[in-house]
Image (cartoon, rainbow, N blue to C red):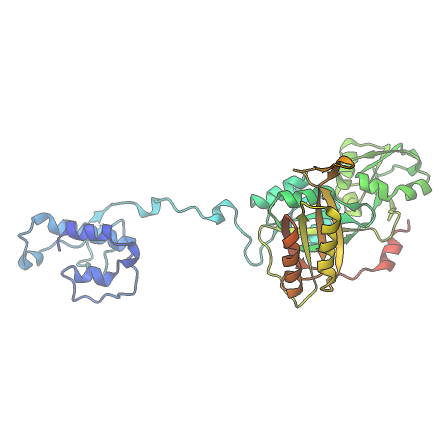
Length: 422
């Protein structure tokens, strides 16, 4: 086979079918040992092409006697020729395609390297350092690399765009109720709930060093933090202006940055350490059992199990009368002895109003709702699978937000009671 035919064969055949043994049989080096199982390297392919091309320069009239005086096999791209073609240790240099300069295929690790075993997870949370969400992220993923975000929406997008690996966001508080914004974002985005963490909230009254309580003229913090400490502030005699801020730790940062000596903030003790503030009073929440529930979000769901307590979160909508459909949904769980831990209704964003035309009473307008439900069962449980299969028959929309392990951390009521004393 001449050089042109061999090069055509290399071009036409798939790369994975090119083996050294097949190449050896097509040349005069069949006596050399070649392993048929090893893949044909790119450097060997280039060397073979160069050597065959140099051997064919004499035309078709070359015979065996002319091959006895053949020149040594050249070194191609700085690499030695294959063992079957190596003649003398003094070859010429042939610079063909520079292999080292060829572009490397872009992989997902180039866009955002996923954490390897033992490396830190990047966890997004809403707020600034010192926020309760940062503490929840540290509790959910000890030793993680916490990434602060200025809005809940940004935390969702950080995970979707591979800037973060997880997000830890609040969904409800034992005193303030549900955080509706995050329920709406759970429906808008395609992230999955992979866990939950419950964080006891211990509010502190913070001010600049040397500031006394009677000199304060206002208190700033997140609206929920202000509401959770209202009775305690009144009992302390702080009948001052109370202004809402984006988040608790942000309020502490604002006082430290502006040097505001007439203003105090309601935030965590960690925020006082980070921003150089003093704690005027600790544990000022009205209820010692102040707990916020956070969910852990990821791009991919986890595999549900049955060897430990699991919780599943779903959302559904319906087109028919709400009362009967909701009764059927609750019955599907009740008949299978599945306990519900939460039920939340939110107005349907795309269809907020439903018109009902009755010839006897006229036209009525009803709100359309989306229902969020948490129940204590794993999606690996046959009872949960059958319940959702039944619910799907009379709902127009059903989505599983996640099936994840429950937070079984023991609650120390005595510790919370002591923390509430100042």
